[in-house]
Length: 108
Image 1 (tube, rainbow, N blue to C red):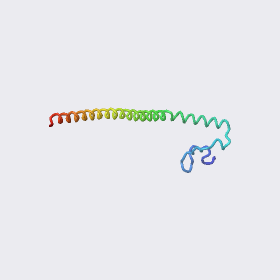
Image 2: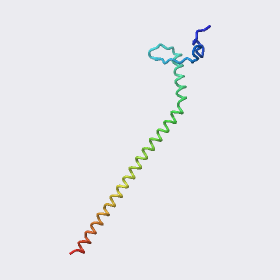
Image 3: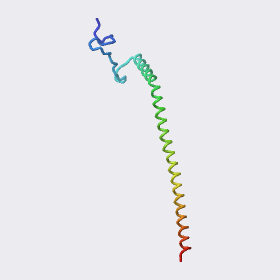
Image 4: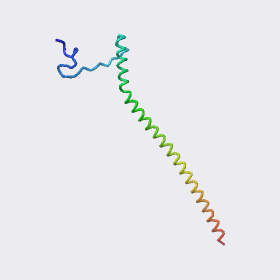
């Protein structure tokens, strides 16, 4: 009979599956076959998460683009509003000047 956990998919004592250990390839001596297998697994994991990352990247890009367009639009709006207020102020000055001239003309 084999030892628990040695080849068994489930540990007989607590019913948990064994976890893969994290290793550092630079510290441990690995065979070329093990390194190739690690690369294959990493590539498979990367390809598995690619659609999720692509969607997230697209959503982030659209969000940033919308923010930039909103700031750009608000800037144009505020500059146009500022010009409008400047024009109103110029018209008000002209109206005051005309009123002063009328007062002087109708005065003594």
